[in-house]
Image 1 (cartoon, rainbow, N blue to C red):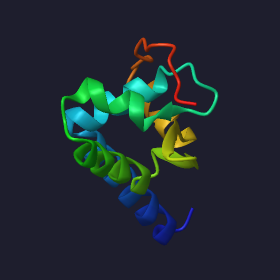
Image 2: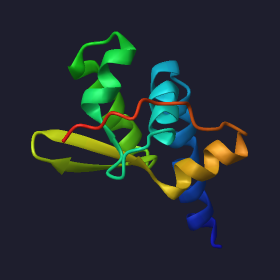
Image 3: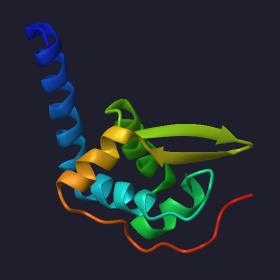
Image 4: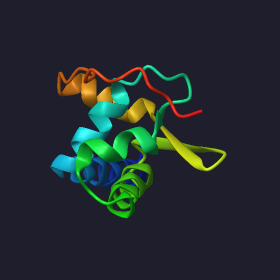
Length: 107
């Protein structure tokens, strides 16, 4: 790996760890890791548990997507989020398992 690639890789990891340094974002990532829905976790199921406004949760989710920890897909009016391989690797490295979630999915 070249020095440029190493620096880019290090910068991305720093961005990912910075994103996870926020308690709300870490909790959201763990909740998504524990989802039972095929499409991923729906924003409609994530927002109530945070006691935050939907716009604030959306901001946190954007930061996680921008850090390469989540993928986002749109199905109708709802956004669904899934872990990326990088997020799964970080959770494994930190020995963090999925958080139990409800079986509800937006359809």
